[in-house]
Image (cartoon, rainbow, N blue to C red; front, top):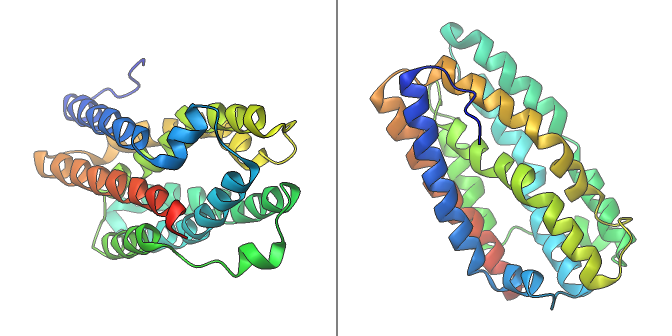
Length: 227
């Protein structure tokens, strides 16, 4: 990956985030529903179940991003504006996910009545807590994991889902959209790392949050098979 970060501290932070990402990939490789997907044993029921559980995280995402934006003080006004813009871009993504669920044979009422699983509950609670802290620069770590999923995995997952379930792309729009658009979101993260990651303490905070979010996101996917 070509680095788009220019400061020395930013480069060190980016290297740390890459290490967290590689560990996250290993965690995902141990999740049963992802194993079925990678081995071609994924069913349309698996897919609907996955969307049912993912919706809870997607619908809450704009909330913690907006909460985080409101927690930045005046000295971080440009960062706050960037984060608000990001929330605006994604706050209705859940509607695309719901449409995919229906196109894959599910009922709209079912997915709208879904509840957060144990991993989603823990992820949501952690993110709202961190977003409520003053100047929560560590949210860069959370966004690195979540946006990285879209940029690095969503297109491949969409392709595998269609292959395994006989789809033609009609019900994998949400994943395909993120696979195509999250490059731009990661570019914004590179910019934020340059502008915000100024101290060794910032780096530690960003990397810690990235590790926690990676683990909780994997837990969220592990819980898909538990209803």
